[in-house]
Image (cartoon, rainbow, N blue to C red):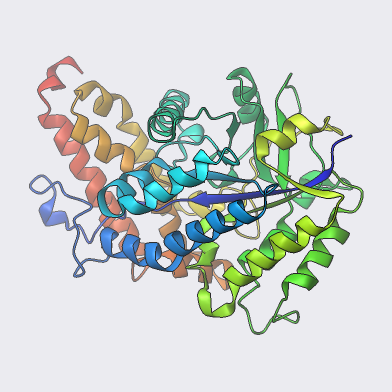
Length: 406
């Protein structure tokens, strides 16, 4: 009988942000992602800031824990656009991720290379981006991916069937109450209509205690100690199989700053969890293999891990977002047929989901989160610069030597 376990999953991602790209530059200047501190989207500046605050210290901490805790395991998804930036600006960070993976106890999870919403617009482009990502992971880390996550944990029955047919052993999403009903996220499930693949669902209450509430001084439980959180974790799991704690990698050091004690909290929590002889750690794939499915789960409507609605409204909730994605994907066939690799790369960078996320006009706490992550003064600026870039992509397609074949 398998021990009950903790499944820790962190997502590593940085987008190529569109700079303050003017309509007067369209058709003339094609560098939508230009660097420099005088631009809204100073990608290298932002990347290196997060490197110092999060990636370097958290990678060092994970290596320390892996060395000291022989049962410790963790799963990571690392977007292709993050890997591009790490190769260019922080190769030591990429090397430190390689060291972690080389331990054999850090699983890399498959996703779309460009962290895109392609699944909802183009099956063929979605599959291409998944394969690009699997190739990149194979090339850099020398491992095969056996678990899958879609962008922002966006999930539905159709995605599960696709992943099952592609041979993935596990897939993950949000353990949303409206879907689970009376069931618990602390079990392994079978997606409805699939044959082999298993479904793991995030325990969002326990995950969000770290990702969103840990540094909040107005929270009734602040400051949260590792001992108290370990008690919560043991109680929450109870007789369940797995406690799935899923969050962004940048939670550690960037979204929740070092001075809150987040790094020490994580190290102590891992050690406290491991002290219980009934507890262990699993990667996502290992958890899927260790436990039988307790039930089947159907999600005909898309569920994500974002905002109060847990749907796609964070990216497609207003007309700006919808129009931006419609215009972008309408260019797909022409862009790919151009065989211009620079043009194709730029178009694919524009598929990254962060772009429509910055265009959100939500209010209240969700709106505050969108504004926190956005490099723009307003969602309208994000839309304006993005659409100027899309317009320029169209001009480049028209000027392509392959235009006559379109």
